[in-house]
Length: 152
Ligand SMILES: [Fe+2]
Image (tube, rainbow, N blue to C red; front, side, top):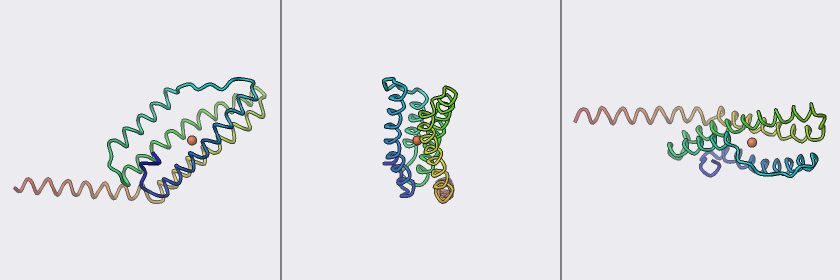
């Protein structure tokens, strides 16, 4: 998604979150260490679906502001899923008295919330408005082309 975004602000936000995600992976390994468990990768079907949806959005739009708005929408769905997951894990850790684990998970939870807010900011500051205008232009172009061909 970062590679397909055209807005610099959006690309920066996505790239920054990739760096943060690397740190979150290290934090998760620390959580497993604290619990004395081996970290093991497992495919998440829900996340896989969100990624497929994002791919579909990118495939059905041309590079530009409208696709950027779609990328934000797809990214925010991912962030919201992460917020729900980390929020639940954090609550579980607290109730189990795993305070250190809870603190680590809360750190990640807050980063996901920040990423979500940043995306909202990027969307509301310019991309959504520009995409709406761009879409109107596209519609005008399409209507104009249609009436022209009718006249013929
Ligand atoms: Fe995230």
